[in-house]
Image (cartoon, rainbow, N blue to C red; front, side, top):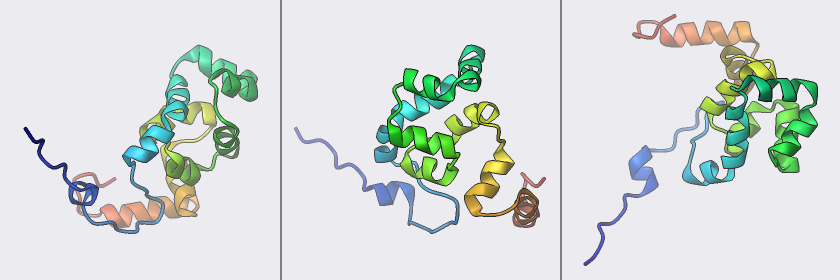
Length: 132
């Protein structure tokens, strides 16, 4: 008995389009970022946020982050975090502890100020149901 062929990732996800500040959350990134995403989503818990605020290094060590992962968190390098394997949802959960919000992360990822990011998003969203 043979198993049906798995669709090619490109077929499933569509063509690769370069969009500044956006990267695909691939299976490889998901696997590599698993530990980091566990750490980031744990920031929903008040005791973890308090531990991170009191001593970020000890908190990251407790969660067994690698030196590379710790460096990415220290630098708040959101583009590199996403490329490494951090989930945008996990980053959102950690935003208050990391001192950022969605608009700031979006602007940083695109190399813009928050004001310029908002202006651009409003123009891009004009006429859409999610217009803001």
